[in-house]
Amino acid sequence: MCSIRPLAVNLTPEPVTVVPLGQRPEYLEPVARWHHTECLRQGLVSELSVRRARLEQQVAGGRIPVTLIALAPQPSSAPMLAGCISLVRYHYRPFDAPAHTTSPVWLSSLYVAPAQREQGIGTHLVTTAEAYARARGEQYLWLSTHDSTGFYRRRGWQPVRTIQLAGREAQVMTRNLMGP
Image 1 (cartoon, helix red, strand yellow):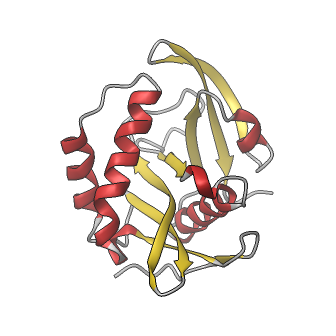
Image 2 (cartoon, rainbow, N blue to C red; image 1 turned 120 degrees about the horizontal axis):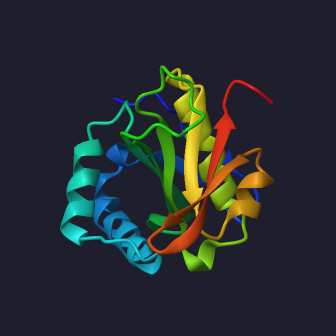
């Protein structure tokens, strides 16, 4: 079982709880649809069945890869799925990663439901994912983004280089989890 404890953020009208998807597998299907839709929006190749299968492999939990979900309480009903973020290992070594880093951990698939945006949920998901990776001994996280460089820079991420991803310019960024 995963050892991450739920955290609450008070920027929203009601606290939002972040837990690994494995603790709430009933949300797997909507998360798979979000991942699939966002990949297509970014011009990436995606199949819903592949997204679903990858998430199903994570349900055992406790390790990376993992998808964390943000749940917003609802009066008299199950919590509403407000957002998600994933930590994955890509078999790629960024040009300036330490030589021992053969499979760095990447922050991936940050998504906040449109009605829940601008309430701090994205920031909360990113900081929770960073803490999750740090607790598992990871020193660095990596990400690529087409359109959110400013969001990540404000949260301590550093641009490393510009790449072409799905025919568009994207920034590769990194964050040292042990530093400031």
